[in-house]
Image (cartoon, rainbow, N blue to C red; front, side, top):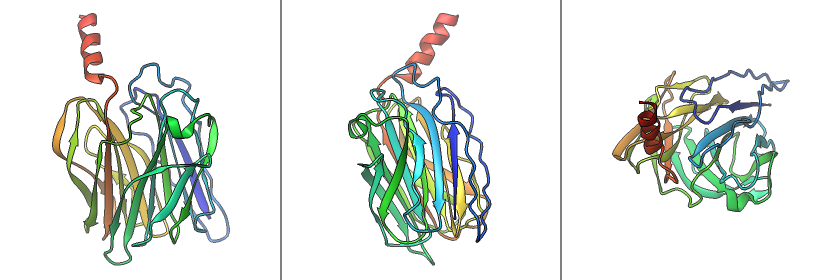
Length: 272
């Protein structure tokens, strides 16, 4: 039993991607999807959010997720969050089109039944000639996992600068604290909790929601944004609509490869 969703936003969009709900029954599968990669992808070298997708499998790790990863040579970055209502059991690998991702970090909240989240990524070097719609799969771990994936183009190819976690949250607002971001840095965040019917909101600016889905005891919302000024010791958070009892959060930062703030200033000066 599984559900799948694909969202696509224009690169410059500042509004939140819409969330959709999926119903599950014990005897049928529910699938909803929309268009794949945006046709207006990266006209500049700045990080551009292109698409997101998620899947929830009730049968362990045998249900892959699919995502249009666009064309080679566009400085791509695929970020993959996984979340499960469990504790202490890590994945052994995540693959995009059969190519191994790099694990960034994990957050494991051992309260009650537990909640476990991981972040993995792969960029242009790892993707190579892979293009178009491909499978994203994982191995290892126990239970039924939420898998949420983002595609960016024009992204730094040096991996994340750093990452931060919350592995002990017991309220419905999950905070990730102490985050440092350089000017025009890309912030990618995931928030999870032990409530299958909860939806996520109230993300810290400039985060924009990319995915939001829950089932079978856990829910996860993911988001991203670009900080146009440097941040020191900043807290990023999101709030679940229900009492999650145990939550996890991960925030990772990629450096800028162009100046979003300078481009905006130049455009304003030209207009005036």
